Length: 156
Image 1 (cartoon, rainbow, N blue to C red):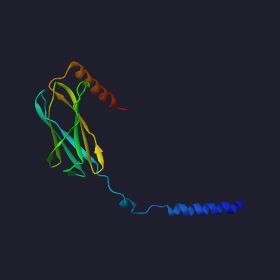
Image 2: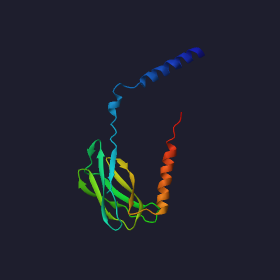
Image 3: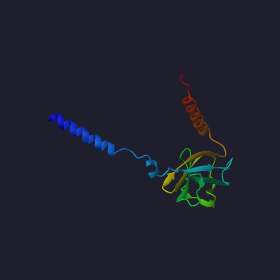
Image 4: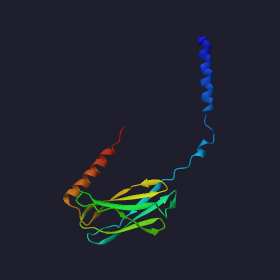
């Protein structure tokens, strides 16, 4: 009797497992991912107290994003002594969004673009220099380069 119940349960589980098999065209039921991408374009050099224009070019699925849900720029100084409030970018067309900014002093800065389109949110970040770097900023950059060099060791 126990043997018959065991065979019956195996038979039922086999039927259930067969019913859960994947269809051949199941991938067509799901949409393809089209991530949002941003290229941050900054001038070759910045000077303190001079108006400069920073650009972000948004693309999604190989196409320029003309009407993003939002694009904001966030800028701060490396040591945390200066943080500008987040500002909305100006739409220039052809997927380009800009911000004109004057920086209060020399140093190492970071910019982060906050952008959203069709449910995708990205926050790429880029480092740049305004004027001249201080000794502590130079040391910070040298430490970062040394860490990168150490992480690229060859293993045999």
